[in-house]
Structures are given as structure tokens and as C-alpha cells.
Image (tube, rainbow, N blue to C red; front, side, top):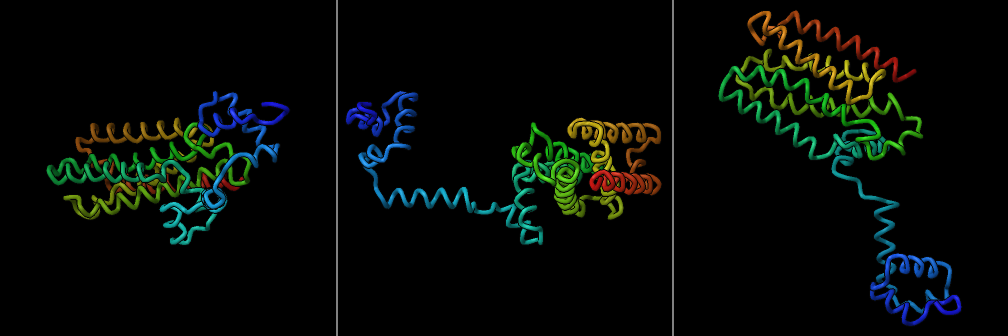
Length: 263
């Protein structure tokens, strides 16, 4: 720079993109405060206006994602739809993974009826995976931003977990009629799923969400294993008495989660 202005040679190297990073940033800083040097930099007016228009569209008025549009169509308020669509577990990859897991379980069960139990055991675990990824600084890209809002904390976790549970339950409900089993047995995963999810949310008030999900998931698998070995049938833990217990746990844990969320 000569006399606080960019020399012709330096300007040409800047425009050609051959300047070192530090020097290029210095030129950028100078151009930001020097109208005379900016006027010497050639540009296409139409291109510049079109570029600003694209930036405005992307940053100020971003186009809603597919998930956000679906949520809004379903009656979800705009601010919640945008919040939920930014959740990692609402991504297409997560939904596809859950659908694929359920699909493989159904295919295996249709090949061998005994595998129906595997579907019933796996279905309550899938929402726990989603809940573990729904909240926290290590999994949420917008965690720091949301932490300063009134929605942060238990309310945000409950909102996202409810959405995750709804998606997983919907996919499992679609898969259930395809199982080679009576309707009652095909739906035997529902109350255990509600019980594990509500239990995870209740425990997350004392433990980090991933640890709570891992603990509840491990407890569920231990219950299935212990009950199956004690009774000689893996389906024993899905019987009528067990379903009543799962329903009661789901109600009690849901009430506890609700009290925590409004506290």
C-alpha cells in the first residue's frame, strides 16, 4: 500500500487471488474503510446486486426445510417447527436409520416367526437413541444459542423428545401390521416404548441425557433377559400383567416429567 492506498500491483494480485492470506485480509480491511480504493476495484453491478439478493434470501429469509414445512402443515407453530427441524434426530438420516432398523426386523420376523420378539425388544430402544441425541452441547448445533432462551432446559428436551418419540412410534406402528403375529402381540411394544421414553426423560433431570438413555436402555434389556430366562419364554415380558406395569410406569414418569418441565 502506498500513501494509505492500495497500489495497482497489489490490487491486481488481490483480484487474481494470489496474495498471502494475511495480506489479503489486510486489503479486505482497507477496502472496507476506503471508498477511493473500493471505487478502483472493478465489479459487475448486476452480479453484485444478485449476490446480495441471494445472501438476503439465505440469511434473512431462509427457505424452510422439508421437515419444517411438514411440521407447519401439521399445525405446529412456526417457531417450534424451525426449532424441531434443526434437531439432529429429526434429520432424514436418523429417520431413515430408524425405518431401516424396523424394516430389517420385520423382514427377519417374516422369515422366522420367533424373531418377532426381536422386533418387540428393539422398538422401545429406538426412541431412547433419538432422545439421547436430542439435547446437549455435544449433539445440538444450536445448544449455545438456545441456552439463553426461555425454552431452554427441561422444556426444550421435552419438546424434542416428544417429537422423536412420535416419529419412532409412527414408524413402528406402520411396521407392526406387517409382522406375522396377532394384532395384540404386534402392538405389545407400545407401552414399553412409552415407559422407557418417559423413564429416560425423568432420569435426565439428574443425569446427562445420553447416560440416562443408556441406563434405561440397559435396564429394559435386563428386564427382558431376566423375564425370559425366568419364565422360559421371551414373550412373557409382553403379557397382560407386564403391559399394565408398563402403562403405570409411563403414567407416573410422564407426570414427573411434566412437573419438572413447568417448575
